[in-house]
Image 1 (tube, rainbow, N blue to C red):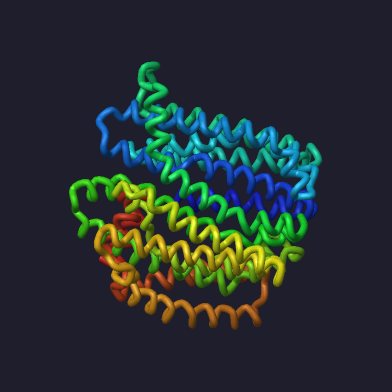
Image 2 (spheres, helix red, strand yellow):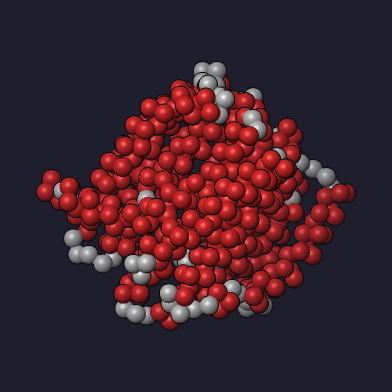
Length: 481
């Protein structure tokens, strides 16, 4: 639910910026976010995942947390210094001189965001996910109105926007830190313990580093082989449906401590059962949403970014087809089994593939080639991680994929979407697809529950966790009780 609220807030910002900025300024804004995000991913080294694992396996929680926190801040500060020094070279390479000062104003975001991810991991372990949601929603509200104010009053000054976002990140970190129960004492943190955290995270860090290259490769090649305007078109299409990716990440973060404990107790069959349950539920909940927005991709892209970005539609569709393959996570199995050192090899194979095909495909087909390269690279990576990850619990990939539910979802959703597309021809309105989505998705879930394809008791628990024992639960019981 928190991700849903943040999704709305972030989506409100995107069309405002796309319409307020010219294409070149919007492209520069995207390039700064791309580069800063790359360094955050690169330098975080998966420290938040290591923290979740260590908190479930060690008694002194405060010691584990603060050494992890300071490790992230120190590594992030080193990365910030590198960006400050080499920003002019990046601006020259991208043939975009306005990128330099904007990037420098945003560099403190790097250590702050790594610190925020450690705080979030600690709060997840403490069962304080609602605190994360509340702080995140308030931060995004301030971010939304702050950027709108700067854009309208201060003539879209990118330097001021990025300085504002940096200060906002600092405030978010301080608030989250206060929510963590463990008090800080000077003797909790030591150089040897920080080194131990970094050493423990290093195999995963190498994986994350290679993953960062895979993630940034398409945008980097588009920026260097093409131009800023084409990068803006590509960036607006090359986005995953945010709620789905956030849900995927949230589920994986929340269950990692449980997976760690089960693996420690050699309860592999219970891990396998958990993975199958998540895959089943994910297909039934997410696939109908994903299929709908693939059918109405042009309407969504036009509504968010305006008609000048209509060429981003095909990119958006191809990019999001890869979400069909993200039915559950397998990387956590490498982490809990202390086999994270195997991940760099998997990512290295994918990275080499992506670097080669991006150059070839973009040279042949421009921005459409970039999305084809990115799509094929993501599929290769997912399949390799699934194959080797599930082998750690003596499980085959075919045992996890809920083939029956995938067939059921396609059988219900594709005819419904074809019917809605036909209706749009006669009832065309720019908000038609939004108005059609609500009855469509409710009808899909109603059918799934009535035909008992979806576990009604499990869904009821989800409803209770969000709304409490109120009218929604009573209505749910009266329909499905």
